[in-house]
Length: 448
Image 1 (cartoon, helix red, strand yellow):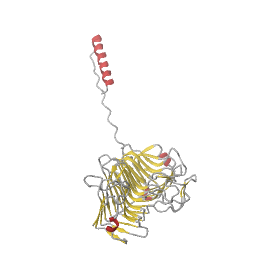
Image 2 (cartoon, helix red, strand yellow; image 1 turned 120 degrees about the horizontal axis):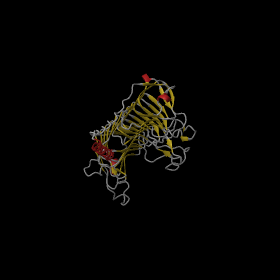
Image 3 (cartoon, helix red, strand yellow; image 1 turned 180 degrees about the horizontal axis):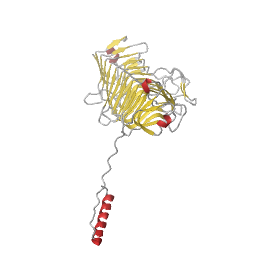
Image 4 (cartoon, one colour; image 1 turned 60 degrees about the horizontal axis):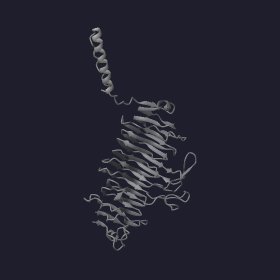
């Protein structure tokens, strides 16, 4: 009970006592009013049918409920704002949600701001943002599941999740997430992002043609889990020039503006995020810039970035890989001991293969030698490495100050010009320029 309410009741009580003394009337002490019971969490209503003719009226404002879309094209230049429930295509009918004109106040097609009230399921829908904003954004909400959806032509992250209870992307296809900064340089547009979301699952999903990462784990809150299973994350050359609705060129045919299939950015809060990759295929992670594009981060060089890689693992993450295939990439595995002062917590690769990569494994910043208990050791077990015409190195070592520590056990080495032991014998500490090459420490790389 508030102080103001107590004062009010005491005042009423004094008035009654005085009234009783003067008029000999019996007092009637008021009972304090009961506290209002909390509002119950709303439950989604029964299915509401949505058609291309009525959807603007049905989905006006912020809605909460189950909506079934009949087949057809839905021209959407203002976002669907939903607090939970479901957006589902009827009986597998073809539903296209498209943007036809830019709207500065609506830079996403579906905005899920659930305030923890209810989960949201999006199923069977096709989204085309026409290179203006995101397709799906979830923020401060309960769980989001995206299943059997097609998402294309965004100039920001296609699926962007921040502080959700969980994210699940299942049997979906995400393509053409491409962004160019106003100054003409390449900008990040990821296919899927997960920020401060405790549980992320991506299964049987394909991603291609992005100017960032297929999946980026960003600023995880610790003790999170990420499972990526049976997915194809590609960075193929663009099949044609890409332009916005107003004709502004984004990228040109043949360019590859992507960075990584997987990238992790994680704070050091004492908890470790477990990332599991299972039965996945990553291909084409090279940076290719044409002469038609304006100068970029590397100036006039024929690449947008240095060191494009399939797997870029760093910062308070433990990685478990089972049967992952990496092909045709600049760097297959970029494994970093420390980034921004945050240490990687160990990497284990079981089975799978790496082939047609310029650098198969890049070991950086004393990985394997950063934690006192040795739990950050890099381990490859029963993995197949295949040397091809474009291969330059099996293992490259960068930076640090201490030797890297890595174990390769039971692996096969196809087409190698020398036995793998001979290829790593001469590896020295790459960036320790305080010493001459002869004085630099040998790497602690074990091949069994």
